[in-house]
Length: 100
Image (cartoon, rainbow, N blue to C red; front, side):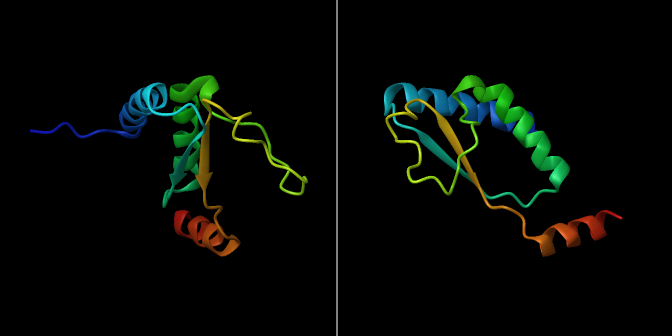
C-alpha cells in the first residue's frame, strides 16, 4: 500500500529530486512552474515549506519588471525560480466568499 504524501513530504521529495538534478545536469537556474488551485492560506504554507526545503537556493529577491535588464542566467546559477500565476481579483473575491 502506497503512503499518502502530505504537502511537506511532497515538497521535501521534490527538493531532493531537484538537488540531484541540479547537481548532475546543469548549473543554470531551474524554473519550477507551479499551477496552484489552493487557497491563499495553503499557498502560504507551500511557500513556507519551499523556503525550508530549498533554502538559499531559492531566489527570493524582488525583480523590477520595469528595469531595462532582468537578472542574467549567469547571475542566477544554481538558483531555483518559482513561476506561479497570480490570482485575479475575481478569483480572490470568489475564494474569500467561498470561505465565508
